[in-house]
Length: 248
Image 1 (tube, rainbow, N blue to C red):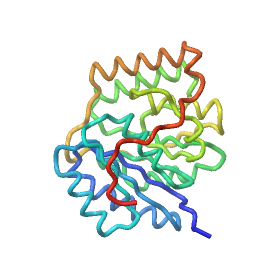
Image 2 (cartoon, helix red, strand yellow):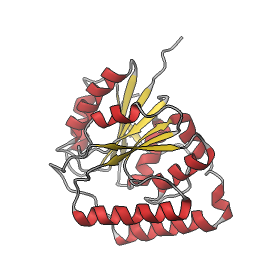
Image 3 (cartoon, rainbow, N blue to C red):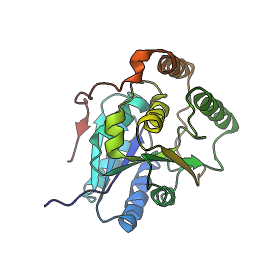
């Protein structure tokens, strides 16, 4: 009987040449101390630097690592959908490729997972620029007010029960995707819990800041989810994604 993969760690990466190798390696070491069987799945979202080369080098010596690649940049919502679809573990942990969330955040969230569909890691205190933190706080307040979501960091790191994510299937194609997923899990599964996790300053690369077009798309999807009855149902089963995989 095949052994069960208990944990999938999924990591999006876009122009993270300076951080991605250490992020993958640190999370692999921590996961090995936490569970018997795990995997790491990283999606390079069309990076223009040496991110892909660094990942290929890691994959040659790390059998737990699977790689996905977008030939052109498609953005974080499409990247996360591909990563969640690819996850094989009973639980799926999302952490960014920038190195700002240390691997021990997973331990805090793992300990809080019983009885819920998702654990959100609230980055506290947050080590981003002040304007970025203010924008994130305003967005979280809007989502809480409209949908009754008791989460203060809607775009923080997440630990999901994989089967529940498969059933939720958000419709959003904007950065509202993660918030919509949390709202669906709150309404139709076992609920969501939030815990504080550490956060570090960025030491390489640059933040992929919110743009006016991405903000407009997110507000469009927030309004659609709040007002349109058709959005109440989950999206259709995902089609096979156009990604390049180097290992399986």
